[in-house]
Every structure is written in C-alpha cells, then in structure tokens.
Amino acid sequence: MPDDRPIHVTRPFLPPLAELTPYLEEIWESRILSNAGPLHERFEGALCDHLGVDHASLVANGTLGLILALRALKITGEVITTPSSYVATSHALLWNQITPVFVDLDPDTLTIDPARIEAALTPRTTAILPVHCYGIPCDVGAIGGLAADHGLKVIYDAAPAFGVRLRGESILAHGDASVVSFHATKVFNTFEGGAVVCRDPATKQRVDELRNLGLAAGATVVSTGLNAKMSEFNAAVGLVQLRHVDALIDRRRELDRLYRRLLTGCRGIRCPALPAEVTANHAYFPILVEPDHALGRDALLERMARHRIHARSYFDPLISDHPMYRDLPSARPENLPVARRVSRSVICLPLSPDLADATVETIVGLIAGA
Ligand code: T4K
Image (tube, rainbow, N blue to C red):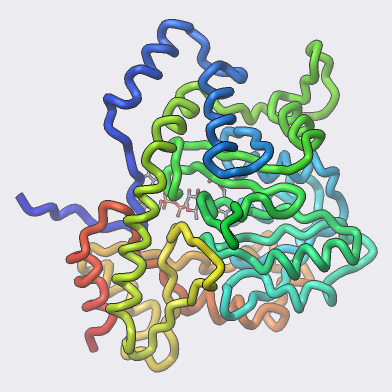
C-alpha cells in the first residue's frame, strides 16, 4: 500500500518497542520513577562514554539546560549571542536577567561571526552564547581565543549538535559548557530531554544541584534551583536510542549526499558546505534560495506544501525580529544584514532516517522545476 502521509521537516525515530520493555519492567518493579534513579545514572554514564566527554548532567529539556548552565557559571550583565536560533537561546538569558547582545552571522557557516564579536563587547559583557545552528559547528577556535583574551565564559547552545565531531572530538567538549537537546525533533531523542556537558567537575556539581531545586548533599538548599530532572522513563528511552543513533546518522549522511548531488547546478540554490574537519550529524538540510531562483523562497515553500512536503524556514523570523526583542539596540536590522538575508532565504528540507531516496528526488524536482 503506498504511504501517502505528509512529509515533515523531521520525523522522530522510535526504536522497536520490545527493546524498551525490559527497562519499563525494571521501572514497574522498582517503583523508582525519578530523582536520579538507576536508569538515569546508567544513561548519564553511557552518554559520556558515547560522546567521549568528561561530564554530563541530564536535564528535562534543552531550554532548562541553558537556563541552568548560565546560572551555574554565574553569568550576569550582557551576553553576546546570535539572532538566528530557536527562541529558547535568548529566553534562557532573559530568565537569568541577562541582556542578549545580537551579533551577525558568518555567511558560510551560518553561525555567529567571531570577527564581529569584539566590537559588541562592553564592560558588562561576561560571556558568549553561540549556537551550533543546524548542527554546523561555530568557529570554536576563534571564539575560544576571544573569550580567553577578554576573560569571558563560553556556553554553547549545542541543542541540534548531538554526535557532531570536530577533528574527531565531540563538539560538545568545547567551551565552559555545552547544552544539547533530546527533543522529539532532534537527531537523538528521549521524547523530551537534554544534557549540560562540561569539563569541570565543580560546574557539573552546580548543575546537578540546580536541576534539583538547589539541593546539595544532606538536603541543604544552596541555590535557587529549578525542577529540571529527567525521569526514569526518558532515561530508559535514551539508553535504547543510544544503540541506534550511529546508524541513524549514517542514513542521514546518505540523504545529505543525495540532496547535494541532485541539487548540484540547480539555479538559485546554495547548499552551505560542511568544513572537511567536521563529522556532521546532518540534523538539518538547510538550503538558501537566492535571487536568481525561478520562484523565490516563499513561493517554493508553498509549492512544496501543495505537494504535502512541509519544509520549514528555520529561523525566520529571527529572534531579534520578535516584538519582545526588537527594541534592543543590537536587534537593529542594519546590525544584522547577513542574518536577515539568511532568514529570508533559508529552507530546511525534510531530513529523517526513514525518508526514501525517491522522496528526496521528488523534493528536488519541485525545487528545480520552473
Ligand atoms: N536551542 C536551539 C538552537 C534549539 O533548536 C532548541 C530547540 C532549543 C535550544 C531548546 O531545546 P528544547 O527545550 O526543545 O529541548 C521544534 C522543537 O520543539 C524544538 O525543540 C527545536 N529547537 C525547534 C528548532 O524545533 P517547532 O515549533 O518547529 O516544532 P513542531 O512541533 O512544529 O515540529 C516540527 C515538525 O516535527 C512537525 O512538523 C512534525 C514533526 N514532529 C514534531 C513533534 C514534536 C513529529 O513528527 N513528532 C513530534 O512529536 O519547534
């Protein structure tokens, strides 16, 4: 029977239910459902082993991970960040009474342009919050150098960057902390979830306390934490998903190659290149629809939607376009020309491990057709 479901930008992977059953039986038997239970502890350890990182603190979702990482590192004042992200990035700053300062993008990586950071620093700047947008790594070398020169902390919003490696090392190992999301729409999902990754055991301890209402050893309250704990159910899903994620990324890589091959020479379409030293996770397949495309971005999105292909224009509008952010001095359009151009031309094409090659061919046909 033909599968006539609409095609979305992403479709979550679910492992065979039978693989989850033993973990569910364990939960039903122990009646331990939350509060750093045995599956939580196993998943936290397995995650560090899988990623090759020193410390990870599981959290209920990426947004809370960002809020807690900023709090754990005692970030205050102003923080340099990107307007091209999900609103969780800058909301995490506002939840900590920090002012976001938006800096424009590098037109090649579509991540924050390190060359523009210095001009945005003020005496109130305490940190940089860059985003590995679409899973494409920021220029971590340049950002780390700037941070060292100016005594700033770096917290990477690595929400879409599970499994990304730079010269063989996890991208999450960079900065003072990196926050990854395990939301349903991500390369690696636990339904909802996330982790704060860091190198310093003291930072891990502070995040661990903050995610549990600020409770330290002996149940003494040491900080104004939140309830950001991951449940045993989500940890069980994570343990099972870890078995599959490498194969899923391999399939994503094949689809990425197919899109790139079929789109080669397509008038008015640019596919951002992935640097050679990066092992990508192919979380998204962003294309830029340039002025010489026959239809233009919005008409192309409509054409695809008529064929039940629901691509998305992540991130249009920019965070800095939303009413609650647009009055910030750094949100002025003339401050962000590259981000603006990208937001008006970007489409994230459907990319999920179960996407058929034939569907990619159909999508490229719609893009290339006059
Ligand atoms: N930083 C960055 C850079 C982020 O991208 C995100 C999250 C965060 C921080 C925060 O992390 P979390 O707190 O979420 O862990 C989605 C996701 O909700 C969000 O997690 C993600 N970024 C953002 C980029 O995308 P929407 O509003 O686009 O989601 P939605 O519901 O429209 O879903 C997109 C498509 O996915 C749908 O068309 C159908 C499909 N889908 C979605 C869900 C939820 C499914 O097939 N099944 C599902 O369960 O925000």
